[in-house]
Length: 246
Image (cartoon, rainbow, N blue to C red; front, side):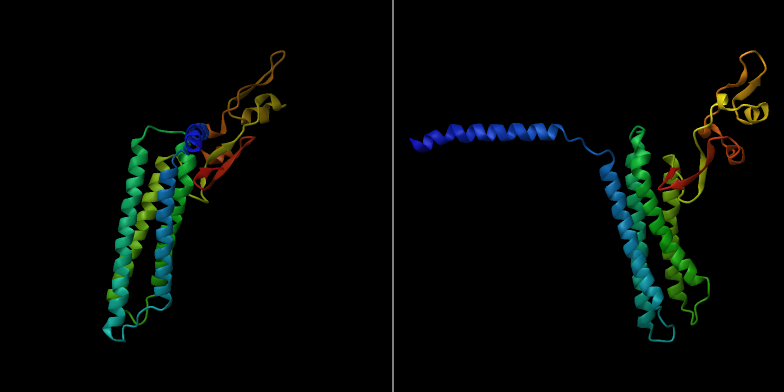
C-alpha cells in the first residue's frame, strides 16, 4: 500500500518540474548569429595555430646545404599549411554565404564584424610574417622552400582579402582606418553669427525679425567628404574599431 501512494506524488513532482523547465526555457531567447560567430572564431583560432607553426619554421629555416630531407620536410609542412589555409578560406565562404542568404538583419554587422576582423587580422599576420622574412633574400637560398612559403603567404593573403570584402558588404570597415563622418552636428540655433552659421551645412542666417541661424544641420553620417566633415561643428572623422566606425 505504501508503494502505491508514492506513484501520484512522483507524477505530480515530475509535472511540476516539467512546468518549471518550460517556464525557464520560454524566457531564454537565442543569441542572434551566435553559431556563425562561433564558426568565425574557430577559423581565427585555426589561423593563429598556423601562424605559430610558420613562426617556428621561420625561426629555424632549413639549410639548403644540409641533406635534402631537411628541406623536403619543411616543404611538406608548408604544403600542409597551405592546404589548411585553403580549407579555412572555404569555411569562411561557407559561413558568409549562409549569412548573406538570410534577409538583412540590423544586428548582423554588430555581431559578425568583430569576428570577421579577428579572421582578417589572424590571416594578415601570417602573410606579414612571411613578407618580412622574404624582404631580405635568404642565404643560402632553397628554391623549393621559398616557393612553398610563398604559396602559404598567398593563401593567407586571400583569406585576409576575402575578410575585408565581407566586412565591407556588411557595412563595416577596416580596423584603424578612417571610416566616415560620425558624431552629432551642432544645432543651427546655437550659432550666433552669420559666418559660423553659414559654415554649418543645412543652416542659414536670417535677418528677419526673430531670425538668426535657422534650418536643420545635416547629419554627420550624410557627409561623405572627410575634409568637409571635420569643419562641421559636432562632427569628426571616425576611426574603425572592431569593424565599427566610431
